[in-house]
Length: 404
Image 1 (cartoon, helix red, strand yellow):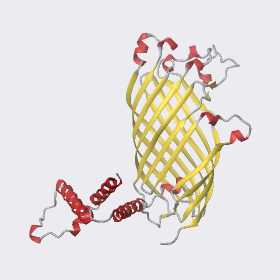
Image 2 (tube, one colour; image 1 turned 30 degrees about the horizontal axis):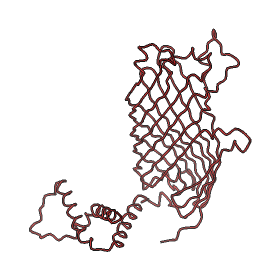
Image 3 (cartoon, one colour; image 1 turned 180 degrees about the vertical axis):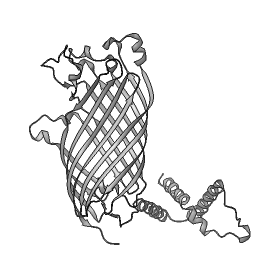
Image 4 (tube, rainbow, N blue to C red; image 1 turned 45 degrees about the vertical axis):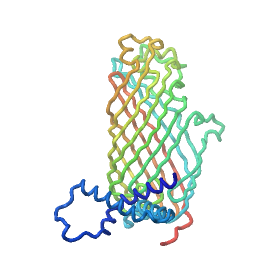
């Protein structure tokens, strides 16, 4: 098995470097053609060169083959971080330590498009977490805890699950996230469903325990002006932007949403006042998005950086909605439109990032704000799910890298 993997990696290496192999082949002068080879001929020539080199290198020992592959992969990884040092100072240290506070927030809005034109705006209580991190080059590991639990308050984060992972090079970046909220939502605009003729009861609470949201996905993007613009300088603190610069970004994302609503948790005095089209039991929808945006790093003075990035996204939504007639007494015609309802639509989403950093290569401190917004709509209702975080951090680097 190991031998097969080694041979596959070796052949991949030969295919990728077959252009260099062609330079080693001596062709008689009378066989040269002045016409440029067609693309198909170039591909076959590249494969032929790869096979030729494979035959010549196949006699090498397994150790030398692995060394050759590691050398090639190392050179490609180095190329991913190829930068102009007049614009960007690379990381000068091997290790880093950081203290960070994180406040997370979320908002879910349901808006009917029927005659009542109602909108319900739900948000859980924000969580405030404190933690420490330790990093080696590009890898950071840490642990955070809910500060409210230290103050004797009930920890809302016990009902939540949050996971975020980011990896950045000068050219490429990827963000992976998983969020599962608890059921401690509050309806922020409950007053709007009442009227002077039907005023809100004084003892009516805004708390609502019938909503659960689960979101997971990833965003992969490419930085065009990677030699002059540093994304890690603003959001990973392992490089320093020296001169102001901007860049376009192109990316692909996938996000899965699962929203569960239990209207029976609503106060009996509220349920009759709400547009029936806003009721559902469970919605699952996937976003497949292509995003294209712009980011700018502004350096107002040495060691300071202010970054702003806005990335709109065109997303294709695949949605499933399930309703139960018995629960909500919906007319048969309405039920047929919603029961086992599937809908495929396009929507416009966006990602907003802001970062403020001070970094003198040894010490750094700053703040970052990240907001994701997802939308979906059909003939009867609109959904918007937005979540994000606000971070404050301070840290330092140590063990300076050896000069090569």
